[in-house]
Length: 170
Image (tube, rainbow, N blue to C red):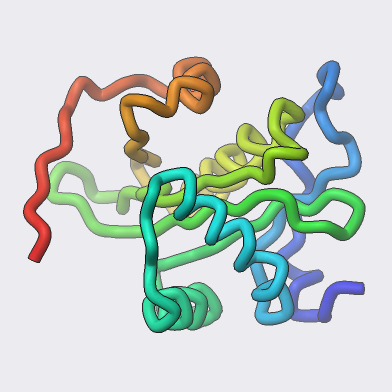
């Protein structure tokens, strides 16, 4: 049973109709404190996918930010049969181009056992709904050019901006 603080934030998957292969018993909800042990293997799986190694200190600070209502960083999880099978991290931020904020979908990961069943789509749909609820003007994200499986979904639910990312690590 979810803690009362999680129940209030629970939202059923945004799928309007049952599609072949979509998990109908999926719940997408905001993460809560008791989710850490289930979230962590997915977070590590995401890092492994991108060949990254984020420190325990950064992971602990990130998790604390997700749970702090005053932070613009958020985490939602997809749950099937009381097992967390996916995560999405998103950050609300200002823009010089619009009055409404933007929402940056920073991380999306679905356990390999749940891929191809609408979990990624439901997590992105959850972020879209939260962004609309907050009055945001745009949801945006980046993906690696080799992430072709994910791009099959992204090409159906969003538009490519044509922009390339440049960065300098400090």
